[in-house]
Length: 154
Image (cartoon, rainbow, N blue to C red; front, side, top):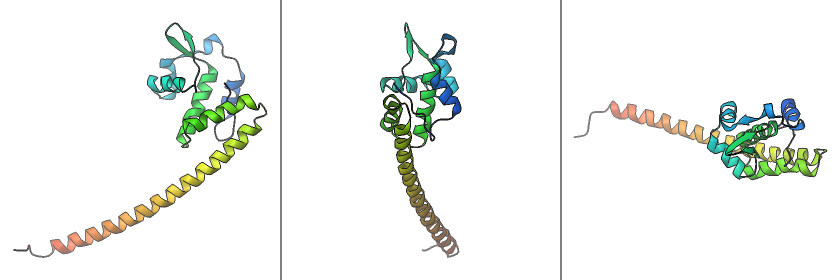
């Protein structure tokens, strides 16, 4: 399984982590992963079931390598930006197909550009809704004040 080493997702530490083979003392348990990345065991098992992470097994225990940690960091960053798990998987898988990273970088750039446009549109819509709600609150405040100054209807 490959990794996406691309600008919106990767930094130098991730690149180094993905380049080095995992050594025994670099393995982390599920508990250590949860503590390090502030995720639940259920989240890690979910990503494993979705074939985004590939921990080694030692009996019933999952052991996560540097590569798994780098992948999880990329997954979490991608989710934060609003990418779907399928989009993240496709970006991670591109590493296997093109070790030059050109395909990865191009596809990631396209997805990131599209996602940014969506987010900016959502922000514009949210700004408009906020302005309308403020107008309604101002109107409500004025109505309450004017009605409170009148004697009660009999």
